[in-house]
Amino acid sequence: MIGVPRWLLLVLGAMFSAYHVVLGVYSLDVPHSPWPTVVALALYTLATVASLWPVSHLRMPDWLAAFDLAVSIVLPLLVTSQLDAGADNGYATWYVAAVGTLMTIAAARRQLVAAWLGVIALAVQSVVWAGPLSLGALGVIGSIVWVAIAHMLTSALTVAARETRRYAQAEREAAAWQAAQDAHLFEGRMRLAQTNRIAAPMLRRIADVGGALTQEQRQECRMLEAAIRDEIRGRMLLTDAVRTEVQHARERGTIVTLLDEGGIDDLDEPTRDRVLSRLAEAVAASRADRIIARTAAEGSPVAVTVVGLSEPEGGAETDDTDDLEVEFWLEIPRT
Image 1 (cartoon, rainbow, N blue to C red):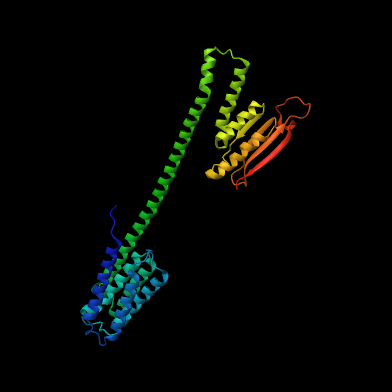
Image 2: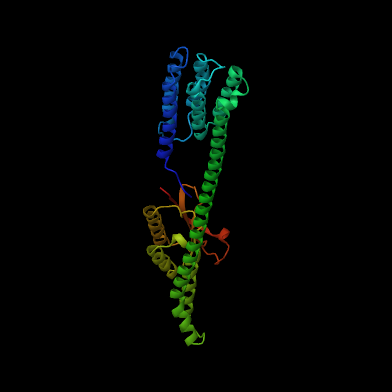
């Protein structure tokens, strides 16, 4: 896409406007009295400078558009009040092109309603002053065509800008989706490598002995299975300290369950380290028969909930947690 520097457009607009002012000054001897034309030139210069003044926003302010519209209505009235409609006024009708230029600037700055009202007012005044044929003779039709072209270009550029923003948003969403997929793939590969690192030595030993394991080796297999389950279900709950304390708890005979449901994914590194250090301390200090650590829901003031359950005195071992007694309940806050 080829872009036109904004300063170049401002310079061109200023040159066209200055040309109309020069024509108006050059033809000051044509009107019966030059003073209305001088006032018209001053108003036109002020409106043009204000409209072309470089600002950060492309759209013209409503108050400035109203001022330009008022100038485009007053200009013909001031100038033609001192001209003879039946005579050849030459460059004294400079106001027609001046109004067209001013309204074209308004249209280019996305004040289309004001621009069309300005040239319509110019056309009506010309017909009333010099008749319908004056629309072509004075160049009113040319001013209307300028505004029409500016309207079409402005509308096309607006649509193009909107489509560009839409495509940019779609590209950002596609990039974010691709990044998420890559992250999931990387995490899967990382966890597969972690699982292979943990399980491969034991699997080779099982294959070497043909599956005939001793009681100690079976216990070690159960510990490895639990560690692999932690890597899958524990995710962000795992640090070296947590892994160590969970391993020690299992060696004491405690059943430990780690469940990460995404509640701490948004925590920064220092906050997550603080939360997980507190989790490791809680696991190390507990003598419960079962420990369950679960991340809280996203948006909750609690980051991780840790529950320690114990078998009732004299009761048989059971898998039903409803029959267990709560030894401790710990809620680790996010902040």
